[in-house]
Amino acid sequence: MQPGMLTGYRMMWMLVMFDLPVTEPEERAAATRFRNNLLDLGFEMAQFSVYLRYVGGKEAAESMTKKVEVATPLAGEVQILFFTDKQYEKIVTIKTRARQPANQNPSQFTLF
Image (cartoon, rainbow, N blue to C red):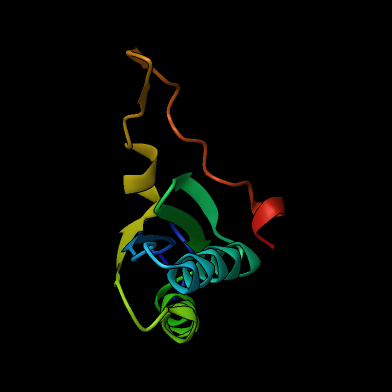
């Protein structure tokens, strides 16, 4: 394999999980702004407080992490998890007690 070549082990996914306070109207507004910022950054909602986005590699992941950090409200907690494209393929999803088909990675056309 050539150095710098994109493979399923170099391509990455970014999972943003958060627990934000929503008791006060201002807190709800901040949480909504944060979720909308994630959508604007290209994330998709996996669950209500869990968002997922494909990133091309370590540099892209670091850049996106900084953008999420800037968008993070002052209160609450945000955690970011990174995993490879190959690990993404192995996620098991169960909805209403039925196992769902394996995740499909984006095609090259979709990525670029």
